[in-house]
Length: 180
Image (cartoon, rainbow, N blue to C red; front, side, top):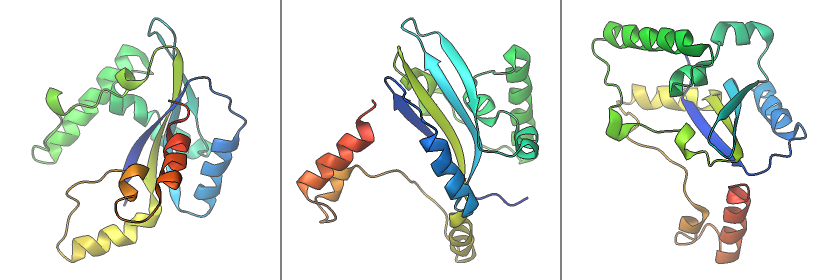
């Protein structure tokens, strides 16, 4: 099965006020075949840092069964308990060996997703496959190219290249960071 580029997005909420709008937008993107939500979790962290996890999804039942809890396995959340975490680690190690020694993150490279969620807040963790990018990625590969790095650009950095003015950048920044 060919899979498009996959991205883990972590969205923070001080006091979540969900009305189904986020899931509805993800469903719209799914219907247009722009993205596929591979997995989605809501993580609540209390004032002492204890976690409560809830599965969110716009997957069909068949997709959910096929994919399982990929975010939990990816970030070591162990939603299936310690046995599930160990099973995920074993599968990852087997896949790395099968690929002929795939490089895995060492501690200095690790991204502590759960550590970045402030106490007494919530986060939505979305593992998204970018369907729209598959033809572009494949064309780049056929041309002998490869992704070296990627990242979202701050609205303030867009001022210097003339895409937005200072007022627009502040509005975008405030919109992007309002819940943080």
